[in-house]
Length: 327
Ligand code: SF4
Image 1 (cartoon, helix red, strand yellow):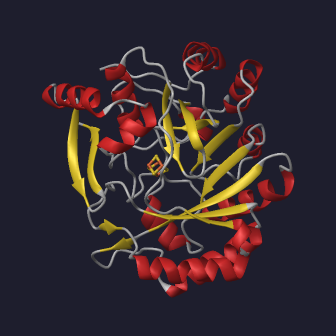
Image 2 (cartoon, helix red, strand yellow):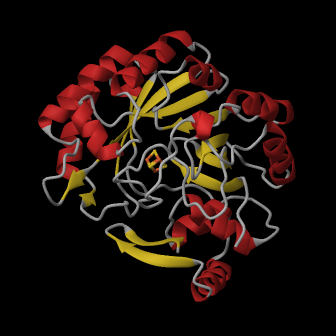
């Protein structure tokens, strides 16, 4: 089944209803990233992108603008246009130009979700400064834990990432910087970031970055490695208390389960493709697909049945329910 550059809309507590844009597309690849995170909802892969200069399938401003022009017409209630999807968007060095192109045809706020890997590069920071909001990942203040969780390609420097985030926070005054902290636990001794020492290290490094906002969440979708599990609620509450004390309630967001939002008013052209495109970027439960795309249960039931019988998607059970993901 083909997939498009534009997908969604996706519902999230942070961004409301956002239309996703993939900045890199390579047919047949489930992700184009320089990390292979243990918690990645897209699964694990045996290849990683080396550097922006070697990236294949970087989309152009014309491709994005044309796709958006066609898709955008269908959506009445969009909150953001968001670059994320199946790739690390900063690997596309045309990102700044693409964002400027999108602004010419849309007045919606623009967000980029990045793994922060290239924050040490001035050209990447300059591209990101074109966005209204940058959501940048930081999982640890400790380099060993950072490497264990993200499993980055050779050449990614933890020190450069922290320095780059510090510079972006102080330089890009028109762009809001939100640091996303994905917390996780493990069923074995794998290094994770929810221990007392890890939280202290994170707080210390976040103070040096001084972001506009800190978003704390834990694993909810089926992760790449089955030994990675969500942090238990009592520990999450303790961590929430520490972050509130250190940074103030106004700056810290806790993304918890149970998003409730009205259904999308999106009009549909090809429901089967829209469902597939959404699941390709983000494994979803049945209810999440209904709410994101504004589809009635009966209609979705038949689409899911067809995609399952074609073996285009599979159903994976997790603690938070049954998730559909691309086979
Ligand atoms: S979670 Fe994001 S940064 Fe990590 S491997 Fe998956 S796509 Fe890349």
